Length: 476
Image (cartoon, rainbow, N blue to C red; front, side, top):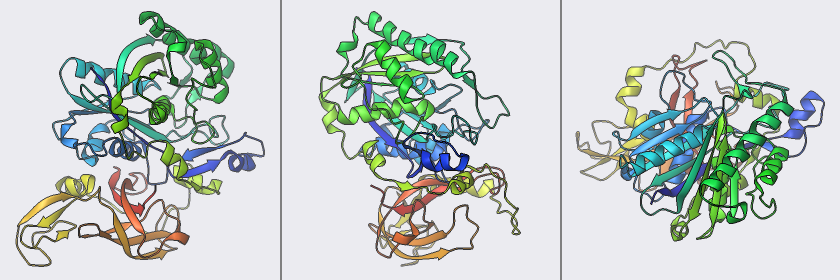
């Protein structure tokens, strides 16, 4: 039996209200808010968060592959899945693939992973969808788009939601697109793309699924499917024959926004958080066609615990009250060049210390047992030489030992906060603090680690994105 073994989710901590956006442009944009990735986040870092959440309590060595889905990968000619695999500390021989170019990329990856497991090529594959889409300022997409990620571990045993059946439609329909050199996406007239696009094609796929597997709309306990806004979501539910009050998983339009290819996956994670054994779930996504899945929840669902998922990430947030700060985070305004030369990064050093940068490995002295970071040849406590074992530190928590706040530093969103963290079990880590409120920083607070960008590869970083683990106050 092939299906979902585990799940995880991620929503950035910052939210931008539609009132704040509307106040800039002098118009009402409706209720609610959208999730905004921090300046050091992108689709890769959010995917890592979702994967780590998905694999909580699971031996990462049992994962045979990682498939990454996004229309906003940071590289056009470099695989993102390989970076996510390294940061999540999965095996080097785990299969990695990128899926993109369509809002349906998530279910494309889901299908490929399920087929690989059915064929016996793998036992467990992580599928992660992550989006960090950039809308044009004052466009119809600006108040709608949101950032976020969701991950599923698919496998052939200990399945919490089995795959009962699927149905796929492909379509050459032109609704939204982004060409090679486009910074922002294009869209055709909204009535046309609703009437002929997602409000027609996605229900066709779901009806095809029900006919193929002799199901009716009443057979589903909850439905998780894509739509770009609440009105279209309700229209699609009605066309499928679902009861909006009891059978449709609450979409995240007013709290997160339209997260593109991750939207249906994040909605499914929210549905799984509330699911009971025996429930049948509908999972459907749209983009150049549509994919629809029927899933059956098993008794194993009760064993998936301690996930932050959607519910806990929703409750953990900070308001982004300034539209100017949002523009800085997304790098869509051109500022005065700084007087200091840009900081460069050697690829050779990143490669040599890749296990330290990507998976945050330190070392434990075999003579005295002290944990140290970064790695070195001599133990700073007992001076033993080259006598260490590697130890992953990214999943450890700690206490803030000391910190500094710099209002004039080279940082996108000031102030720069740096701190020293005493790790549980021993060892110290020196880091910039991210996702923090400077007013609430204090010695002794609980800290954890998150995979983030250090240099964006545009302004600094020798043209490539530099990633490393940063510390933040324990979020939720």
